[in-house]
Image (tube, rainbow over all chains, first blue to last red; front, side, top):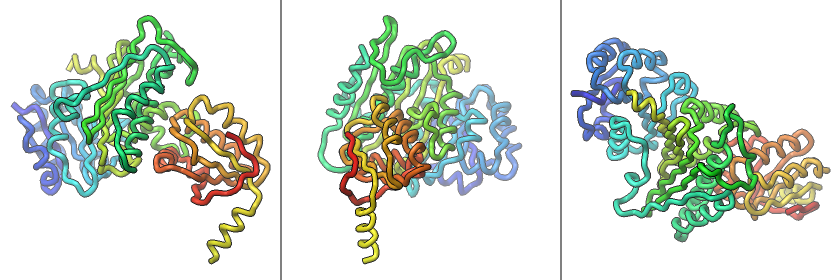
Length: 317
Length: 111
């Protein structure tokens, strides 16, 4: 029973990935080459069990820009994951247009990481939302704080900085990245997430505010000496997956960024993390977070991988 | 030698100087929005050596401030940390303002 399929451009492309994908159970690989009709036919036969279709970025969007709608028709229940190597980043707009919500990027000059890729595929197969603990060494404490008011923001940032203690330039830069990520996550939850019945913002950025009676904003993080994982959960669930992709694409294309561009905070979070995760339970909860390596091999400030999921779609799948 | 002379000319040239301190965020709006109205010369220097964290709202305010100034003066940025530089590069701030290494004497200061 195959529940994961991988589409490569050709045999050379397959060789790039086969080591990293060797440990993934129930996986079938196929090359799409110049004519994707044959692999699409094979996928159609597996549609009842397929949970994930991974697609090499050498194939899409450049080589076969029309491939995604055909894949969705062939296996409508499968989650699509775009896998990119050599640090190359596919243009966001086609991904946005085709609603590709999962992307992994392997740093330049490094082979794809088996452990990371397996973890991502397993998360998608099981339709599990991303969590902090599996990103960290076993036994690493995860700190969790519930906000009472906007006045807590600097205190929580200071606590995170305290966990990222250490000397040297690399550690200092890492601490600054952590502080900025915490700032953006907290501001986003306190001022962008709360919406009125017609979607209007309830609070102005920077204003002092207490949490509303039923509002919950929880900031969590852990650091195991190499990886920082952090997430922010709010009880609004007001963010839409397409909206997130739209924010990333729009801010990516604007140069310089418009001074009133929406989603700038999310764009900055995405660019500073090694991998960016958003999980939305509409009207219930939004979780934004991700992980960052102390010695990240990704080019500073370059586009990153992302995983954007929506709870109700997963339930239905 | 010519670089040194250019540096000397740059430092002697009349310019406006603004120093930014601490976190730059939504609370910096009043300060940053006043700056374009204070610009009197064709060159403006912004000193970030005492600036700390700059969040997305701070970036928005800097972009707005620099866009207002750009039509009437050249903008130079000094004292940038590695973090500031990464952030300014990814948000396009460097398309409006040029980073420089050297420090200069201030004509007009604001903190």
